Length: 241
Image 1 (cartoon, rainbow, N blue to C red):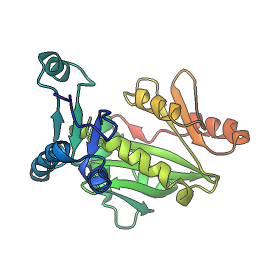
Image 2: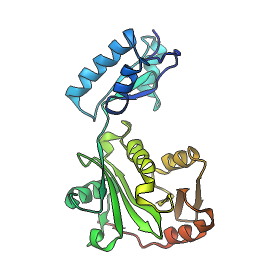
Image 3: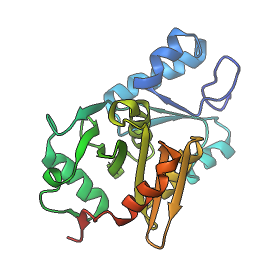
Image 4: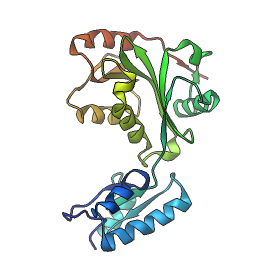
């Protein structure tokens, strides 16, 4: 009847990751009593089902059920198992064939030959089962995200957001100028998410031409013109199959 899991102030918690949020919510008493019991039931279920599934805790009222079934946002509290991501320095320990398969399946295009040897890759943020990855290159002290790919089977379960958050949390370790930038074609379905990410960051911005959107977060403002020009003119590394 509460409509989902509530915090101490009786505010609805819209999304909970078992891996990232559960222990803190339980230890700090943010979720307790009947709310914790519901969360423990979801945890038990998701530990068996894995991270490609989710549990939605909603009100039994019919209007909320319809909202959950027939709208994108849904209603109540969404509980996911969560994902383990690993930050790699360079390509050591990374299965290049698996990353290639992920990228090509997401973009429906082929990576250019010798991509991993030709590109100045410095770091990779990778989900442990190769369901998502961000490939980062260095450009004059800036971090350039050359590829961002998430398995479509995981969409809606927070993997993309976790990879992006992990990049920003560790930006000092792979960008001397603490700046991240990337580009996306105007028809890229991820543009909506990218616009949301830069709105969440006061130091974020974007530029576009007739083909590309260029996004950035952080970094020296007096170098924005140069990084925009670099992104707009960088050779494409995905080609039609």
